[in-house]
Length: 223
Length: 387
Image (cartoon, rainbow over all chains, first blue to last red; front, side, top):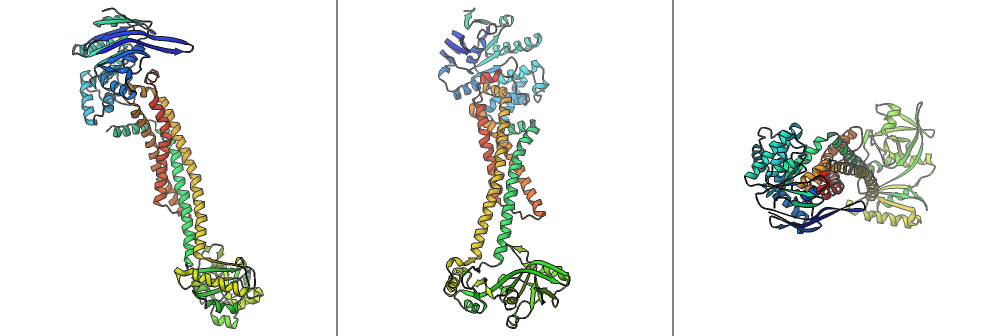
């Protein structure tokens, strides 16, 4: 599913060059649930951005589902993000002016679904994450856990090959965090490929396979 | 499909910041309504003047003799026989005081005319009769007075049979002109007409400096123009500069060209406010892009292409300008109508309305493109990091 070979990404911070990723090689199969653990500044956000096709590496190869990401145009990357990747962010990143169902519909809209179709699908996914009856609520009217459920529904709605969850429990209390982890585990149980990025080793431990990232280098503890 | 949704989204965003949107649109509303009102008033007054001029008839020529030998009244019969000429109305003109009893009116134009004058000028009488050839032959001390003058001296009753005093002599009023309103410098309502043979006593001369000539054929006014110019040149020993022959059509043309320039000028000034309104739209859209950086980042992470984002912001700018345009047109037409009630001549044409509306759309597009382009170029990573 994911084949990364010697990925390097350098940022210019004032006069100094910062190597956010240094020859990172990372492979992942379909249906796996992998956590990437690292302290802040370790390069995990950069890795997440590259995995999510929001950014491209300076050097190295990245194949997602057989597609050469490094040699894709901006437009192709936008389509890949739409069809193959579902993002779940720490701070939910819902559109505040839209209600739950409208938020979930956004990726479908960019995919060209009709209003009727996308509404039906969005309702269905909100039901799956346990938000039946709250479809018309705006993010402000929902608790953190509920907002993250909306975000998960939005990530799932295009049936992506891979879900990228960046600190999905970071803004939630422990109990709600566990609920979210439960949902992710359940999704993985049904065959969903998931990458979880976190700084918290306790959360990483709940996942089958865990890799660490320190100073831009990946240490694979399971292989 | 996406398009319809984007329009709905634009309305949602405009609604969610009502005050800001209203203020933005205000610039466009003022711009468009002032274009409509100013151009409408310009066109209206043009139409008004044009209709006044053409009420004289397009087959009427105005002749002015500036220097050279003066034309005597007894020559007029010759002019009448020229080819292309149907009738001739010579006149002399002098300004002076006219009084009746203790009432005096100053700066009244006293015209010496013959029996053709009223016909050529299409003046009508509300009382009495006009100057006849008998008055001319007998050099009768009679006059026809304008309606305003009549009202000053005699109120609303008929002035026929009353006398007015001009330059020390008494003249019997034989008729009153219908009110004409003032047009192009001559106020027919404040005028005294008397036989040209009689006016000689006031002006001291029977030199004719002006003539109205009615051409026989409305479509061949130039024949009359040609023959009168020729006649005057050969008989008065005058250079072509000394004789001015103007057709109503040429006066109409030069008048309307002046008015058109004025209208364009007014429209131009008003268009500047439209452009200022457009800059307002751009300003608000730029602020909106900055405020919604996060939203743009989220949308990009969910698969929005640069084109999707560009169109979203462009449509928002367009919807703003279209709304402003509609309201501006309504306000402009409303203001124009009220200006019409206040006595302005207001005429709106579909062209002006559609052009200013098109201009509003153009303004929205031009000033919307830059902010929309900026939005579309935002780096999703940086945009997502914003709060």
